[in-house]
Amino acid sequence: MKVMIRRTDAGLSAYVPKKDLEEPIIKLENEDLWGGVVTLRNGWRLLLPDLPRHTRLPITVEARKLSDED
Image (cartoon, rainbow, N blue to C red; front, side, top):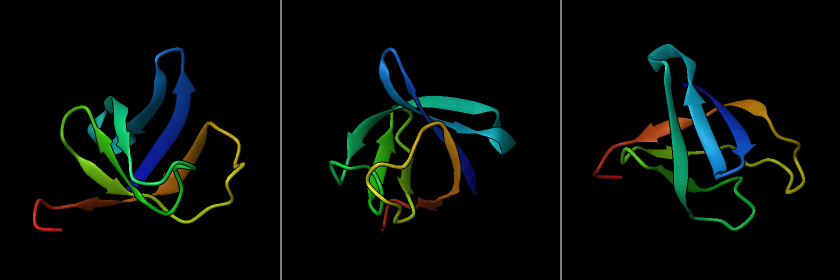
């Protein structure tokens, strides 16, 4: 699914256009964000693509929503 990642005054945020959903990112698997799982405040877990550490934000990426079993 397409997800826009951006930096806000409160930290990192993820916006999912198809769901018209914007949630803060509350947990990062990797310190540099990319190539790992992030957890949104609503409980969704998204696997982000592996991008260079200094990728500029905001950016729209193709992320995979993980189920509770993953």
